[in-house]
Image (cartoon, rainbow, N blue to C red; front, side, top):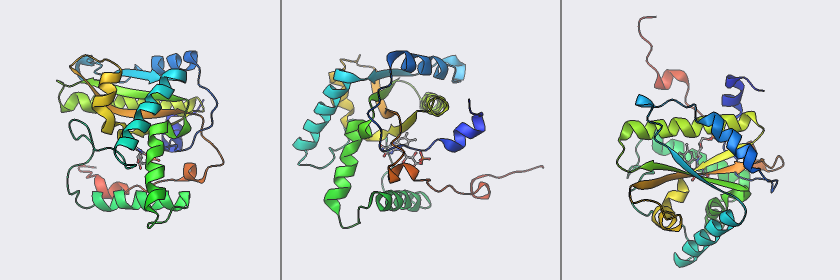
Length: 227
Ligand SMILES: Cc1cc2nc3c(=O)[nH]c(=O)nc-3n(C[C@H](O)[C@H](O)[C@H](O)COP(=O)(O)O)c2cc1C
């Protein structure tokens, strides 16, 4: 068992997984732990759909079709734009740029290699090879507060996964198929698919899994007063 601090520091986004399965009891136990996440008013404003085996394959096939329809590029965002604000400003713009540069350097894909970059992006739609895909769902009528609480749930799940030797990658990329997935899972009108997550065992030999993305120092984001 890791300490909470160890789990926080060890968790990174995993973008290449081994095919080793994650069993239903494992997943249930993980969710059973994550459900202790806090939420305002204890609303617990989260739902998940987890797919493995043939159900995972069906989603991957659906996504491949969407990429083919979009001429090989990632499909345009479906439904509300929940990813980045338009014309991202500093310092966020540079942080995002840096992540991309560091990631593609690890993958050995140059800036000019547009096809290579697109192929990597498309691997999102294969859950980066993970045997389990999770979709996080919120009632579309919820407010910003509940969205934050859904985020806490996702982070709790990711940390609990680390404690069990599992890796995750949160995947807002799946939001580009928000409507298609909504239809696929025959969800109620009010449900909104926010984000996906790949879950499985990290490939220890993959360089991309060694990417330790930068963080701003405490002084850059925190104001401490009265100490
Ligand atoms: C809500 C959320 C959605 C994300 N979506 C994607 C995604 O679609 N594809 C991807 O490769 N990484 C995705 N990421 C991973 C981020 O790029 C990553 O968390 C960030 O660069 C920090 O790196 P770390 O997770 O390795 O610490 C997502 C992260 C979060 C929190």
